[in-house]
Image (cartoon, rainbow, N blue to C red):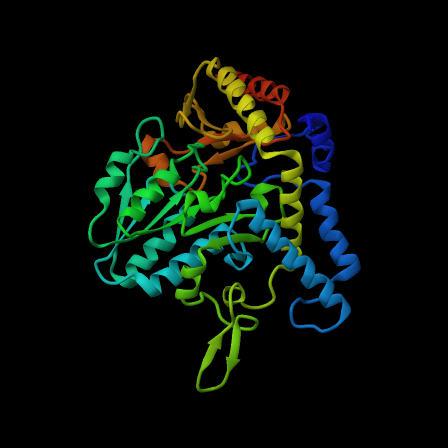
Length: 406
C-alpha cells in the first residue's frame, strides 16, 4: 500500500484544528503523539457497548471485555515478536515499567557494592529509579559517556564492566537528541559477561520494527501514548524465565493465587505483575494503535520520517544563529536546537503564536544539557503525519523569532 500522507492526516482529527488562527503544526511528538480515529473509536466503543471489569466476572460483558484485553496483549506480542503473550506485562507507561524493573530486579539481584550501568543520554525516568535502588542497596551507578555528536562512546562502555556489574539499562533512542543506539550489539556485549539488559524503548517502537527476540533484551519497555495510543498504558516485555524469578512490584487483587493471614502465593504470568484493575480500555486502545501502525507499514513510516529529518536538517542548517545538538549518524526524526542569545522558552512561546507546537527545556534529560553546556533546547520532533510544508512553516516562524529579539 502506498504511503498516502493526505489520507493519514485525515485519520487524525486534531490536525484539522487551528491554533491562534493558524492551522496547527504539531512538532511535539516525542512528548506524545496524536491519536487516529481508530484508537479514539475503539475506546469509545468499549465505554458505550461492553465496559466491565475483566477476568473476574462470569457475565457476558466481562467476558467480552476480557477477550478484547487479551487480544490486545497478543497484538503487542506480535508487534514486537515476543515468544509468549504472557511475557507482555501491561503497565502505566515507560516510567512505571522502569520502576517495576528497578524494584523487582533490584530485590532479586542487587547487593552492596554491585554496579549498574546506564548512559549519559538517559531520560530521568531511566536514571532516578536506578539511583534510588543504588542508595537503597548501597550499590554503584556507572555512566557511559557521549561524544560531541551525541553518540555513546561504546569503547568506554566496554571498560565499565567489572565482576560486580549486575545490570545495564539503556535507552534505545535518546528522547532529547534523537540518537539511535546500537543496542543489539550492546546487549550482546553485556550478555557475554553474564549481565542482564533493560531497554527503554519509548522513543523507538513507533519509528521502526523492533524484534525483542532478535535484540535479545531481557526487558524492553515502552509507552502507548508515544506510539499513537492512549495515555496511562505501557508495556514491559520480559523474558519468561526472568519474570518467573523476580518478585512482583505491586501487590493486591488479581496478582495473587492464594491469600491467607499466614502466607500469600502469587498468580501465574502475566497477572503476577498486573495488580488491581488494569487499564483495560487503554490496553484495547493501544492494540488499535499497533494495528494502525501495522496497516500503515513501519517501513513506509520510517522512510517518510527519514525524508522529513533530512529535509528539516537542511532547512534549519541554513538559518543563521541556529545551532543543533545531536548530530549522530543514526538518529530518528528529532531536531534539538538553540537560537543564539534567545532563551528556548521565549522562542517556543513565539513559535506557538504561529500555530506550531514545539517542546522547550531540558526534555527530562538534564545530564545531556550539562554535557553540552546549555540550559535547554527547542525540540522539533516529527511523526508520520508531518510534512515538508510544516517544516517550512517552522523555519518561517524561527525567522520571525529572530526579528523580534534582534
